[in-house]
Image (cartoon, rainbow, N blue to C red; front, side, top):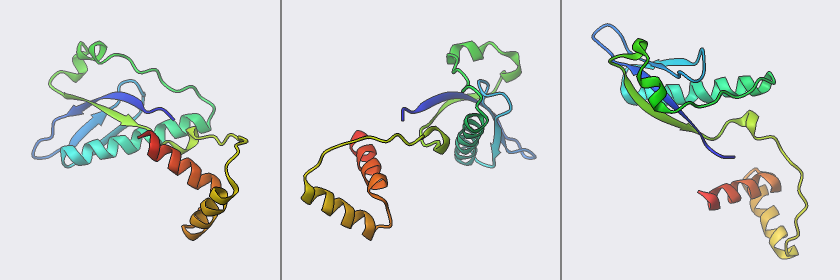
Length: 134
C-alpha cells in the first residue's frame, strides 16, 4: 500500500497547555501531546484511526491539499506546520487472492518459518514483500 501524506498544524504549547495538532484535510482529526515528539506520534495514530473509520463506513478518503493552500488560513497563524506520512492502515489492506508458483522446497521452507513464527504463509509473504520494497 502506498503511503499517504498529510500536512498538520501544530499549536505551540505554553505553561498551561500541551501542543495541539489539527489535520486540516481531515475534518475532525485532532490530537495533542506534552512534547512535539508526543504530539507528532499521537496525530499519526489519530490519522490512521480516522482513515480506518472512514474506510469501515464506506466513506471516501480525504484529498490532501498542497501545504501552500493552508498557509493563508488565519486560524493557524503562528502555528507550526509539518507533514505526517502514514502507511499501515489495516482497513485499507483488503486481502486479494493471488496464484503464484514457487519451487516446492521454497514453499516448504516458507511454511516451516511462518509456522515457527506464528504466521500464515500469506502473512509471511506479505511481510517479506513489504521488507523488500522499503
